[in-house]
Image (cartoon, rainbow, N blue to C red; front, side):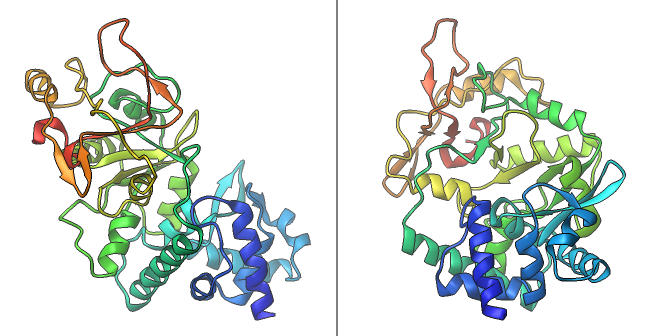
Length: 347
């Protein structure tokens, strides 16, 4: 049963899609056998993409309901499935590798021998995956960058600081956890360049789950805004899932370890032109200095990274108009990176 259940798990993870969804290589099986016991793998394979109560999951499982409940609860505690209360009823949901299982493994910031081993297994799988399949061509971005202190006409993907603040203000449940990308790098013994760690935010049901089970910390709206400011001051990129409406999480990413940024920079034509990150002198960002922002944003200092010179605009099929006089041409982009990913005022 052991190997067959993991072979079935491969198909299930492929069906859930997302980055590193599943590939029939030894590194995949090394990773999933560390993550899932055979019994947990079997339960994972029957979980749906949408949340379901135990009563709907039980008929699909050979386990009796009590045993199934115990396994599900254990998996939820390990970040292998999501759980939360919906309509007064506890539900469970299958997760993709990313965003999902991989991030949840390191959300608490633990540093144990198993965590270090797991970080190396994940990295080995990701490396082997890319070697086997090549860099995945980004046709529709899974995530979106959320610029801060910038006025734009929103097509549908980029949001200003004020809009991010709106997400924060309308969520009563906000949790903060450790950055997966930087903590995984730390566990592998890599330099994290003194970037802040506990700055990734989660909202709504997802926040409830990470606070209840994975060591996430509950924060107030004011604390969440302060974390956003801290991340901006550190030069981090504000990124969320590419959805049209609400966001479930807000990551604050760096240029060294962020999965999305490093994947974008591996694209055949990751960037062209000049930076469109223009500070809005009328921004309502707390402690903003309009005069300083306006003067320093005009001429960002270029930053050489290998063969690439920043400022760098990463092109996609999303059209937005940067802060500019009326009638300015629209440009097809959704991600804009500053020199060294730093805010102009930091240069």
